[in-house]
Every structure is written in C-alpha cells, then in structure tokens.
Length: 366
Image 1 (tube, rainbow, N blue to C red):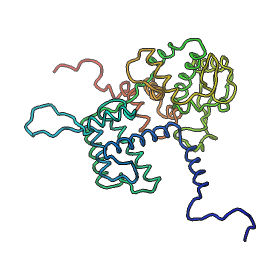
Image 2 (image 1 turned 180 degrees about the vertical axis):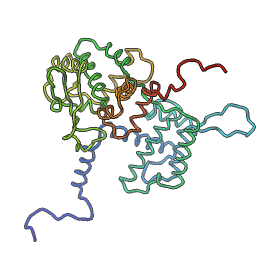
Image 3 (image 1 turned 135 degrees about the vertical axis):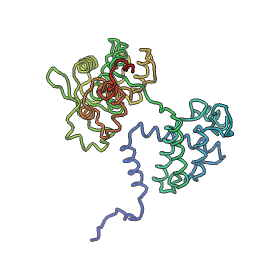
Image 4 (image 1 turned 90 degrees about the horizontal axis):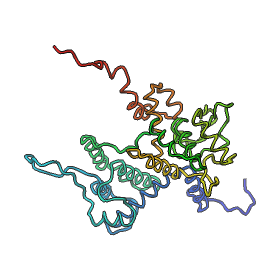
C-alpha cells in the first residue's frame, strides 16, 4: 500500500534526529531527579580527574588501565613494608596532592584525601552504564578489572572498614526534632513532613516531595491513607492500582491536618515551600534532605542525619518494639528481606530470646 502524502519515509536502520530527541526526553522523564544529579556529578568528576591526570579530554571508551588508576588514586591500601617490620600499617593512595587540590578548587571534591569505597563503586557503576548506553567497549567488563575490583572489595572487608551510614531517627531522636518545630507555617510544615514520612513506613525523600493531594484520602476522624503512585521499588507505577495505602494516624494525622488547614493546600503537592508566610510551589527532595539535617543540628543530635534517617529509623524502631518483619515490609515497601534486615536486626536482635540464652545473671562459679 502506498500513501500519497508529504510525510518523508524513515530509515528503519537508525533513528531520525527528532526521534532521538524524543527518546532522550522519555529517558529523562523515567529517571528520578536525584539519580540524574548523582550521574551528572559522577561524570563531571570523571572528566575533571581525567583531564588533570592525562592532560586529555575525557572520551569513550575508557581503557581498563584508566579504571585501575582511578581506583588506586582514590582508595586506600596498606603501604608495602618488610615482613619483619613492627611499624603500624600505613594506609596510602596515589592521587597527587596538586591534583587533589585542583579538584577541590574546582568544586569537584569537598576535602582532601581518599574517597569512600561506596563513592568509588558508584562512580565506576556510572561509567559502566554510560559505556553501555553509548554501546562502547566497557572497561568494567574486562576480566583483569573485574578481578582487581573483587580483590579491592575483599581487602576493605578484611580491614573491616565501616560503611558510612546515616544515623537512624528512631522515636526518641525524632521527638527531639519535632520539638524544634515552632507553631508558625514553616514549623507546621516540617512537623507534618517528619511525621508523615516516618509514620507511613519511612518514606523516601523523593516520595515525600512527590506526595500529592489526589492520592491522600481522609479516613473518618482517625487519620488518612496515602496511596503511592510511584516509588523506588515500583518505578513503572504498575502496583499503584493494588496499593493498599499507607496509614497516617495519631500524631502524624494531627500534624498533617494542622499543615493543610494553615496552608490552604487543597490539590497538587502536599508539601510546599513557605515564602513570606505563604505556601507556594512544591518542595524538592533535596530541600527535604536539607530540612532534616538542619533540624537535627538544631536539636543537637549526635551523628550524621539526612532524609534516609527517617526510613532507617522507622524500621529500627519497629525492631525495637518487636513488630513482625512482614508488617514492617508492607509499610516500607521493601521487596528484599535482606535489605530490610540491615535496619530491623540492630533494633530487634538485642531483645530476642536467642540473644540471651545464658541469662542476665553472673555465670555460676565452679
């Protein structure tokens, strides 16, 4: 069948420029703002480090030797020493001080010294994904690189290097944060955010930022039910129709009602910026992260806190109160038991029967 039309025929072997633009738009829409920012930051760092290290422009594909150089520049290892040496083990890395200073001056690094293992692995993951998207030969698939990285991870594990984690906002420190919230509009908003995120199962900051009135349902005078239309574990939104909803009850419901009444929010984003005493546009996920850090600082809490502290705090508190793991996962939305147990076990293990088989008294003297 031949169409008599002015629309030109497409080449089936490649995308047109217009289609490529549309594909990029779909990819951007299907990617969270936090993920996009972290990928952009990682690639900017790669480009800056590569330019300073090799005096060349960063282009794909990257050679396997470059990946190994990046690792030894940024991760610590035990310095070589003689077998009979009694000196303490010295940890070293190979990033030249001049390049380290240049990266800091350019805003690519925050402080001198090595990066954490998690940061380096994330930047390697970003590099791998970029190669895959560009269909370039991936240096992370090189057998020598894979074996090298396996040994690096094992070395860190053998040295028992602790992973940096956000401190958990369990009930007691959360109440200290809530005590910093005044009775003005900003204070009511922050109290509503903290209790909404915590009581509904430890919502992620992106889920709180994206919370909308059309997904919030009043349940009599008792509280609310909020239905997630999108989450990290359901990024396609397929489970939204069968989502049973997250309860917002008690203190959390009271805080949310106070915010809605005072702000006049009736549709759109639930949580908004407060400008000159008025609620304006929706908050970003980054703004929620900064708010939690600031409230923790005002409350003088010990430890490093961020938005994820609400999620880990909810699960840890559930462990403290011996809430069954299945009920916890139903609210958090975790699909993986092992992931949930990272937070649940620290709270529950000390109170379990198996942890106290010897009893609490002194052992009998023979």
